[in-house]
Image 1: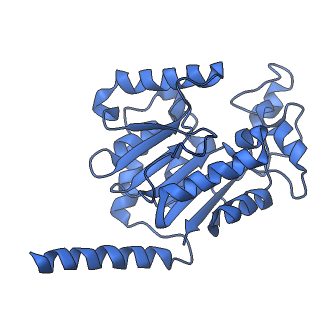
Image 2 (image 1 turned 45 degrees about the horizontal axis):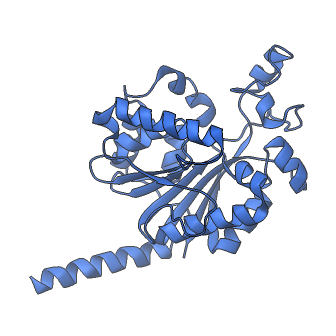
Length: 279
């Protein structure tokens, strides 16, 4: 028995050491890629969400982030649950999916309503979502998104611009929380609307497009190291200089019928897809 315990400990230690030594994005085994493919193709997904796959590329994105079915994965601010429909079934049997959502008692009405709708979504389909753990991401330093060093992956999709609206310090706090939740060698997968090089902070906040330089800086301050970039969510048709910022484009189409065909032809925003490691 003692030999088994020691052997198990050595395997875990070797796995952590191996993860910490990564110098490029890890590659999934074919079986793991197939499991992601099956989750993306799940009948549990709503038709409206499936229709957005062309703009969000979930299979390729999650493969780049090297999400494995046995992982503990924290998704930051999952909103209405677009990625929840993929991640919860993928992780249900062997892993753990933690949705770090809004505070249900937030003073912000939008946050309360969004969290309530998310909770109802989970309750409607217990076969898929009964093992989802829901926590809170807010700007309170005392509120962790997950137990310390418990997560293999933390994922966030198009959220950094929202944090920047609250302030740079608040954004730095979120990056610190994500870092604290990850195991040594754990990975942060991040997708965000990409601003042109040299865009100032005020413009980023107004338009929703953020420079890659700022995100790498914020991540570095929290202790992350940039491991890899992927072009999977880039859109060269997006000039990023729209009247209503990123919300001019689908799916928001904030200008209504004004130049609608033009913005539909552009499609969803140009996005960076970055992978960071916690050493």
